[in-house]
Amino acid sequence: MRELTFLEAIREAMVQEMRRDESVFLIGEDIGVYGGAFGVSLGMLDEFGPERVIDTPISELGIGGAITGAAMTGMRPIGEIMFMDFMTLALDQLVNQAAKLRFMFGGTTKVPFMMRAPIGSGAGAAAQHSQSLENWYVHVPGLKVVMPTTPYDAKGLLIASIRDDNPVIFFEPKLLYKKAKGPVPEELYEIPLGVADVKRKGKDVSIIATGMMVPRSLEAAEALAEEGLDIVVIDPRTLRPLDEETIVKSVMKTGRVLIVHEACKTGGYGGELAAVIAESQAFDYLDAPIVRLAGKDIPIPYNRTLEYNAVPQVENIVAEARKLAKGNV
Image (cartoon, rainbow, N blue to C red; front, side, top):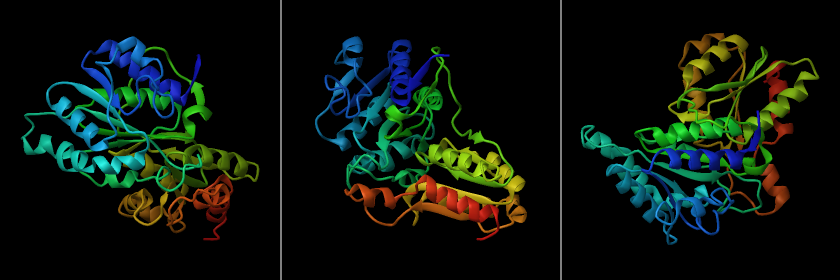
């Protein structure tokens, strides 16, 4: 099978869906001639024209309002935000409008849009362009939250998100755009929302990781395999709805769990995962406390050395998983 980068898989999914369904269009800042902040939409203006690849003024609130209104009138818009940090400017439309309208109208209207945004640190983009605020959106009933980590998952989940009849927030770890490469079918396919993926099987420790922490956890697991430790790596892929069953079954098998995410530890998604495990039958199978490894509670620094140390790296995951496996927690 041919291989695509993470970026190419996202672009192909959008292009194929726009060819298939004329109600799908892309709207955002500098997505046309410029091709998007990271080049994801390069070439799409040439194929679909300015009526379906729409450059907007610098107004994230406007983008949020446009896709909400368009979705309610029968379109399936894709909104792009340059950096997920700037989605904070669209929160009123996302949280107070889009997430609630289907409920408030008794199911008589739908809001089928997806909003895409790059997420995370590591690009030297400093505190206002490097945040991981995914849990803000997980907290809101009515929103679905997706974060793929492989090209295959990116295409399948993006197509499923476009076709979903609810507002979907789609986060793309920016460091994966060009670094992640893998097999991707040419045909259209969907990966159902709410289904986790066991990226690596094992028996000693279950690592549940999100975003950029998934490839780092896989790298850590390979390093620990040389020490004789067999590590599971689970990627939820969809943060809301969450595939609790896959996580609970894995923890019941290993008895030890390490939760890894890039966002600040306080109020981060790891707390939700820990609560799900603690409230499930897996609690009685735990042989050690649930451990969270997350970003430090600081703004992301511009300095590269400080930035590197602000979020979990492979060596940190190795150290925590080793302690768990050997009962040193």
